[in-house]
Image (cartoon, rainbow over all chains, first blue to last red; front, side, top):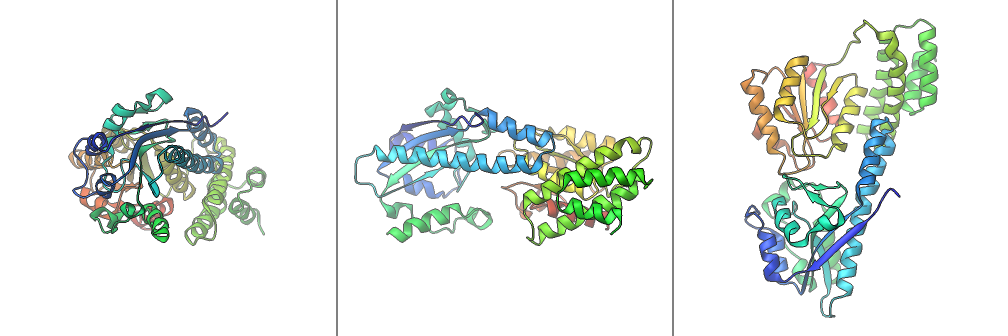
Length: 186
Length: 211
């Protein structure tokens, strides 16, 4: 089978997550996650991977000049990894006591949370058990892997002004789309 | 429609079987490989590039055309022994050291090749010295670098610094691209161009070549 999805998650206290969030001390001076996790009702570190075979297949397709198939498999694999992460988020929040209203996941490398925080995240979660390793540049292998934190809490905590310094150069609108979805529910 | 127009149209359609057949026929008719390449293949890829830029076609359409072009070039190769195909320019390309993401870089390589550029693809996790050594050795017109991580982006600055030290800066253009990059960052590190995607890399290379 091409994709062999595996996942791991671990509930973590706000205090312990604080150390993971701080990472190597390289976060932007203001990162939205800092204000969000401190008001959360539940936190979990997570990691998911599709395994090595799919990345190998993408490389093989490009090497054999099947560029379109390679590019489409790459996009499909990225989307599948996102779906696997969503599935882990649902599993975590379904086990929480009632009281929280919404959940979102965040990954190092986005929205002011520096990618070097991967180091502490990996030390704490140990995703090596499901076959994910970290390079010196904090890159996960296999490539089609996602790690981060799942935050559960009241809807209001996920709403923030998207006028941080890094927002001006950000080309993805994921955080705004997710926030708008929650805004509609408030 | 003559055979080169037909070849160009088949390439636009990404029809590898037709491109293979027509290239073989064109060779049998005695057409020079550089004519088949320039007036048939590159002409077709140029139309593909324009349509992609105008959002008339999608990335897989471009890649199917690129596959067809590769198949045609394989047929032409034996007829090119001892001959030098005219190229639009030479680019040394790679993903910077510490970074293993190569899809974006591969797509840029494919589009540059389709536009008639000679591409020397160094792969991924490429050390700064290798970019500069290869550019120096091959007399490349440009170095193209890709990075997907904020932690690996600074390697681009090291390549620029090394190019300055070795006297290549200003002669060999430096192009950078990748998801976390911006035009401002490219300017800040002294790169000649920020390329949002493959078509912008082709456009910038053509500007540098004066075409």
